[in-house]
Image 1 (cartoon, rainbow over the protein chains, first blue to last red):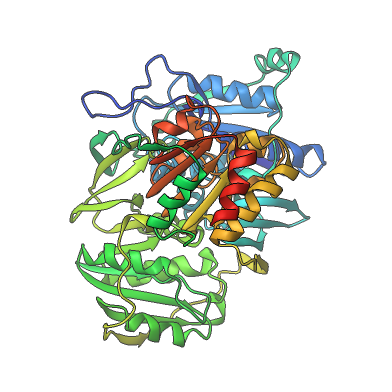
Image 2: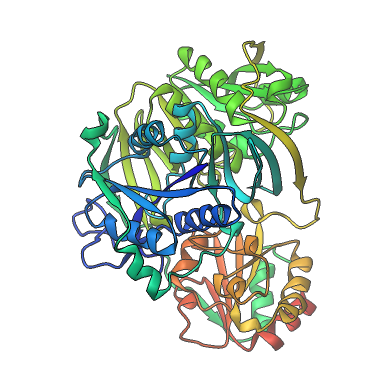
Length: 249
Length: 309
């Protein structure tokens, strides 16, 4: 079985995003970029499945600018076998990403596509589910544990209030949640080796997919600012404030 | 405009998350609702009483019992032939189903809306709420998920909707339900808790976390959260994590104990109505967003607070 792992280059999760003064978006110039944290978990899970002898090849794929090659190299350094970049400088919405990935899936015939539940930039949480619909495959979102069997995959999903376990026929789509695993760090020798692994560069046009956005962003603004409130002197004063609010009264 | 609201339920009782979606849908037009499940007629009757709901479509079929997206999405997509907008709560159920519906309709979904600005214009948080985007859709139909904390809940009485049975559901054969383990704890879950007590790395150990945070949370009937630092240090499991990569919460009261207030954490809780911080470092960034701050050693202040409430 092949595993396809879509990954996205996003602002590093430790960086505070700054809204551009003209309200057109978030300033990403000279900002540290990294692999979307949920996608790192997806890469890790794919590698563990391969290391357990249940998959032969892990292919990382990204849709984005030329610099997304760095993100793919990170996936290769972690242990992915090869990578595909669908290069574009345009904004590509989840629906268009899903259409591109569906084309890649048709060429590669993976048994499993593992991807992050959401990217920490646009926070859409859509691509995996959309891809599953387009391919007509089963989906397990928010995976907490993934068990690969001969012709099925059992996934415990993190749902509100607990876990739900579903069984999917393969091929299938699984999106990762935080508790699935802790991604490994790439070692220096593996980073060096990753430079020699194959990385194909394609364009959306190669796949015949129209990526014209459906949504227009009219404005991007700072959220309402919270002003610092008051400091209370001691616990008694805090208890008083809480009781005023009807808390713990 | 005719809207279709996804009703969240457990086949017996409608869940509260539905009510904010009804309010959001009402801002767009006529509110229809879909109750999809097995043996869920009682839920349809509850929804028909919700203020503002005109029609309840009831799809009762064994294949819909567990809300599997593979079975539900084609049903919703077929109903969308006679509706203009599909709205679901931004719960794990809604987030699982809505994008599958959107792709079947060739529509770009608008996730997690905070407000309705026009018939096709909405605001939504991006970058974990560090920015708010106003977006306009060019699609003929709308598929939307709604952030529950951003809209008032519709009244559960006063409506007089009609219930209509809809057919056409079938099992896709792509997936099957195995089991569910829904926590039966008395403690409210983080995403719906009215009060949350969260602990940070300053607690020093899992034992201290339990010893200091849990009694206060018990006293307040609160949910328990944690900063990523506390989770990374192994004090509590991962699902306690509040923050950009954890849970996004907006309770009435958020009590941050020994949490410095890293960006990552603030992104997950800064929409809380009242933020209270207890930290011994008076320069901690958490105090910049806190409505009420107490500079004190948590190991003495929190037990004292617990005792006096």
